[in-house]
Length: 106
Image 1 (cartoon, rainbow, N blue to C red):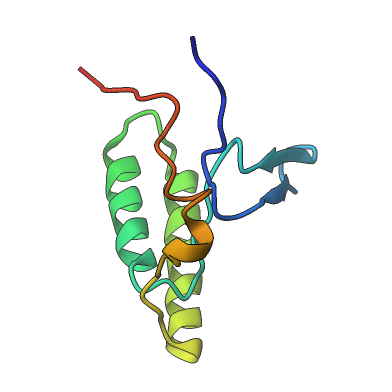
Image 2 (image 1 turned 90 degrees about the vertical axis):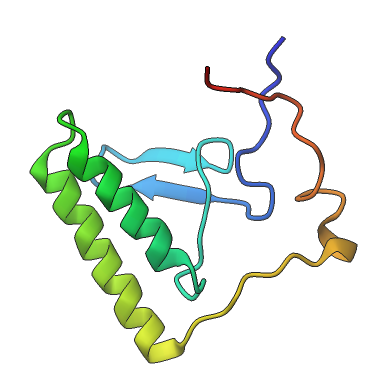
């Protein structure tokens, strides 16, 4: 039986989509990367490549992701980057717990 659990265990998230009639999302719906994460641009590059090849994704969505990447790159240029770390002493009880549910794509 599926037991919902947070997608993001590290961050409490409260995101309001200002473009979609105020839809609200939390850590149960998504995950968060800090803009200073050294590998955030690589993650965005992979995402942009994937949606660019998907015929169901419109050009506007691809452009939105590209603009996001530009903002993150500028932020990193201005403020630097940081390799993310996990403080096992603090996060062992939350972030490093095994997943309750495992999905293996076949």
